[in-house]
Length: 359
Image 1 (cartoon, rainbow, N blue to C red):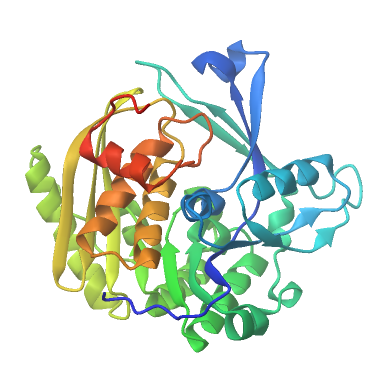
Image 2 (cartoon, rainbow, N blue to C red):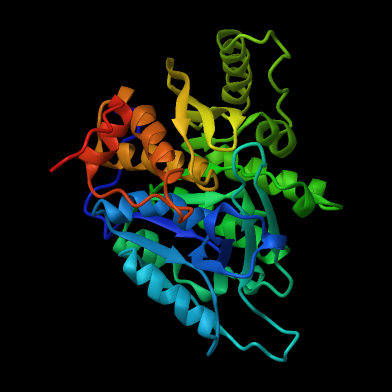
């Protein structure tokens, strides 16, 4: 295996994150036409970690909570139900206009009506994440962690969270923990902060072992030239993506795994879903094939979660992208925005196209 993981670690996977809640109308209806909503605890990073935690690997979440908040209690209960350890300071709300957990208000779309998502992040407590609140020497040195997964969403959330992610990457590197970095570019986070965030993202990428992103992520976070326009054929697009990834490899040679998903939307509930994973000199390409989508949010996180699980399990490299693809497809069949695999067999059945009843 091209990634040699530390042994005898307490945690297989650690994810720093800012937790919030997602509210979604029932029955696939738009937000403005609804009066009944389903609420769930959410974050992109715990979406990734859910694959490993549901399949039995030890996972820890580094986050922060609003003290005495019923939403914080709801989030903690959810993380426990996902079999995740968590750690983080309790921050006073301060006043009615003070800190709170973010709200993600999501219309999943249906048929010809595309999804619409609004993020309400005013007063988000996750913006206070600070390295001083966590014992990184204990986490990476004494207890041991095999992989830490960092996200550009957290690195760009605030100046404090940018420093937080940098220090985590430095501590992980020092202690031999492998670093996964999903760039997750968000234009609104980067306004008037381009130089600051570009420096942070490039330093994290320079020590990462796994780099994940789409063409926008690599261009706008790392300054890498994107794929050429190419033709309309999927095969032509794949070759152009490979050329882009080769440019990323040259710029960030520490990483040995590079991954991107491929998605073509036929309609809200029918997508063509594929991926490209480069491991060393080898390419593992899954040309997009049709999947039926209940809710697309979280599919990309499911892919990364499946990829990391396969790496943590020490499987042969060809299976990494396959398991990631299937975990992403699984996540799009669920009302939660994270995959909840019953077992490995369920995921492999999705990869094999076997949707027959199991009795």
